[in-house]
Each structure stands twice: as structure tokens, then as C-alpha cells.
Length: 216
Image: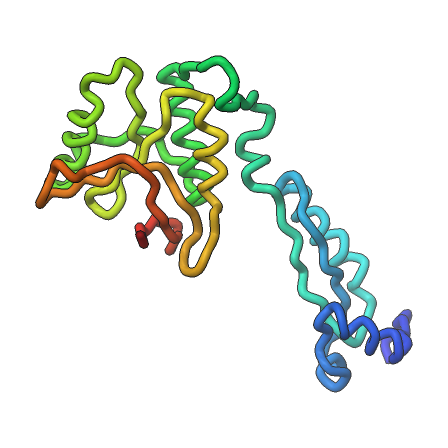
């Protein structure tokens, strides 16, 4: 037995196994440290600090390992300190700078990559250029235009509403998880065969290798 090893009552281990998915007793013997499960923290830094704290506390313990499951509120961290508006408030029009920053944050939330918050029109494929041109035409007569910040699947233009009152609802959809999907995002979908049926709405997506893939 290791020096300074703490002994756990077998009855306690069996009781905990009912709720914490601790491995069977025979499997526990091959482990030599104990880590505790955690919860949700306001920032990634705090979550990592909790992992390190429990890893340190468990370095001299034996018998079994509990899975570490500390996480953080990613949405709260990205949009922390921002004033939010509801649809019941007076309409608040965003500036161009605010639209770009909001676009960057949405890409960060979805892909873990900040990006520029802008579409480089010089590097678009033919299909992407047609989709963006159709989006521009779609809202040509609107005084307050939606801001496009990405194109996925060649024909789906992701956009941000020009009104901050819409942002809360648009953000809430970004992590609307379901069967085979990671979220839902506002987009204009261009139909190259029948352009007149192109429309604005929401599309479902999943993230693969930090890339947004449209699934519906």
C-alpha cells in the first residue's frame, strides 16, 4: 500500500456507484487517483482551475477515478456585460461596427474561431457569389439591412438582424441541440434553380472540425 494512502469504506463506494457511475470494484484497483465531478462555471478559466484543484487533491488517493466534467457557460462568457434588448423595447438599430462584432462572436460561439466578421467577396466561389448577390437583391429596398457574415453550403448566407432587439432570440437558437444537430442559425437560402423561392429563415447545422455544416 502506498504511503499516506487513504482508505475508502467499500460500502460507501458501492453506494456512490449507484449515482456516480463508478467502475466495478475490480476495475477500480488499476487506478491510483481520485478526481471529482464538477459543474458549470462562468468562464473557461474557472472551469480549468476547478479541474486542477481536484486533480491536486486526488494525487495521493487510490482505487478509482471519477470522470471530470467541469464546463463553463460559453454563451455568458462571449456576451458577458452586454446590454440586452427585448422585442417589447423601443427598436435599437446597431451600428456597422456592432454588427461586425456580433458576427465575430456568433462565429466564435459556433466554431470556436473568431474570424473577421466579414465576407471576403473577392474569394467567393461562383455559387457563393450568386447567393450573396441574391441576398443583396432580396433586401435592396430595405432601409435597415441585415448584415451577412458567412456563407455555408454554397447557398446559405448567415446574417445578423440590424436591430439589437432581435439578437437575444437569434443567439438562443445557436445551441438548440437535437438529433444530429448542434444548433439553428438565421440564414437566407438561395435556390439557384428557382430563385424566386429563395427565402430568409432558420437552418439547422452541426459542427464538424470547427466547420459549420448545414443539415436542414
